[in-house]
Image (cartoon, rainbow, N blue to C red; front, top):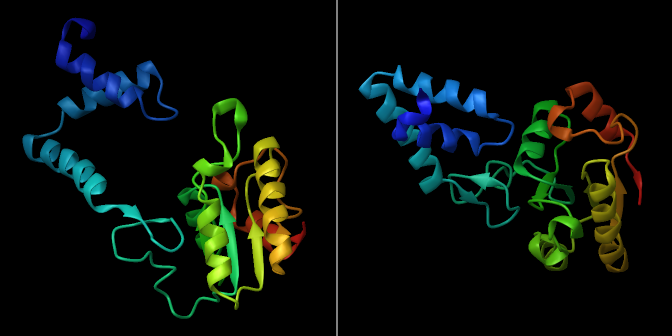
Length: 200
């Protein structure tokens, strides 16, 4: 039935473009939107357009923000001598939930993956090196990419670039299972991984 209603089908297809949303879930979401009042539907669409218009990358760490600088970079109490390098903004949110890390972040927005066409120049690695070069107070870079093949390759690539600069490079250690995602790790696991980081 739904496939004969063109606008409903288009709406379902848009939901289906989201990660982890299958065809049936997308259609359920489309029907749920139809059950919203006109005001709720407008609020829903405005939330999407506002997010797209207002959220941008922090010029310092490349995390998402709707301000000039992200909350971490604008917090003067953070230790700017320690930078935690993560794959994406969701990883920053995961670390911030732990409330044990007082350094700052650098978001790569991906990992090196030649199979998927992701080369180092498509990540924010150059910007990380520029941050290190511009600030002689940086003592440690924690490479917190996921413990899978791409994450490990990215960590090794970054460490080879940074080591000649005289800055300590560490990697998250025990607590994070190989093949796991930081986004789904609990606070205790992330805390133990931070405490047990090792030199790369």
